[in-house]
Image (tube, rainbow, N blue to C red; front, side):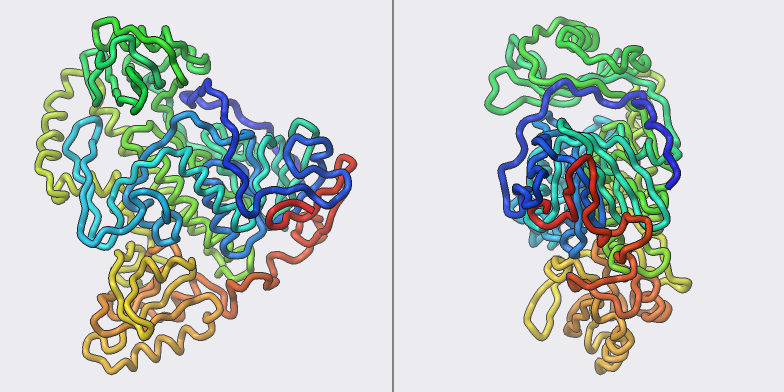
Length: 595
């Protein structure tokens, strides 16, 4: 394989955290255990943790996006390894918001079981939110869906996903810094270095989910579109000398913004964000100090606000970037590795989650040889425009936030639009945009139904086995063909005909026949594992739609060999065997450990 260029530098505006990480989640079923191979190590950093690990997919990045991709792959029987530089899960506050479409997709895949707020509501719900710091945005979700805004600390979500990943058989290796990424026509090689030496990972595909400073993105030379930083911002958890000196909420002055949120159970504890719109910080890579944050708060408020202890501090900006493609042959990007934006509106975590849920089932099909030609390319076609929309709306929000008196009429206008409330009209347009509920995927069919590419809202269904709904039927992760017997006054003959047409894909597809009272588009609909409609009655042939997604005769059954997992002459295949490396062989990744 040809060499690759060196990693690119740290981007302008990337956060500069100053707080160390804390130990990871406790051991769970499937946790990495001591190996049986002589000279190898079961924990990263132990003597002899060198060699070669073979898998079907290696995911670089153990944050929530990377772990979610790994969960999806392992759930479909794909042998997956996660490589993470941090030795533990970071306790530093990061994202706390999941928006409606991400919540809805996670619930359909069963990932929010046990998470507060992760269950559906019998009636339509709405949550108050903001746009550019202005209150009044009403984010709504229909009945039978979970509430549209889920507040969950990223640390909690990351632990939740890691526990599920390990239980599914994912090998999670921490304390390894990736130093090389190379690919050939049949596989990918990722090299990483820990405290005791180098490990080489060989796989069919690699996913870079390693954040804004993505090593994978740099080493694989992904081209990007960037938007330079124009503002400077600080964040941190501090203890105020005078509790209550800063009221919770969003506060704009003539010189900038302050966002304050009380920290429960910490007297005087406040989570602060400051925004200086006069320009980017010249020392953007320097770690911030408590004195710098105190001075910035004083400048914006026009008064001194004494502060004591700081638990963590960070610097960020409105630097934005999006890669021009999410795929470079066998290397794919997800989350902040593919797109970063100004963190207003809490859209970043949701965008990464939706990346993972879009990519997971497609990559699993590709690994198992059951994907139709071009299916994996639709990951970029579907998710990159959504990320560009996030970048655009956050830049628009920042424009409204600039403390320029010339913008006051525009802010007044937006305030009036937001005040109309009710989740409809202009308010609804903004709310649907921020919550990603306005996403419509590009159709694949030459003669698409108006439903194709739209998200299928949860609905109750009557089946021969009893009452159920879309959420429960999608929990297994298989695509659904829902057929309504007797819909539109028919006698069920259409359902039987569609079921017969789908028979060549029976190993992949779950066919569910429902009663005539079930509300389905046209009486028949193909639902992708991520909840979006792939076909609906009244469009082109069902066989054409199925053929655009899946190979005939494919299967989700574990252990089945497919063309894309055979040994190749490059030595990068899953079945290439144990190779010598730095004096020790690690071998193929297996659920729960290495051998």
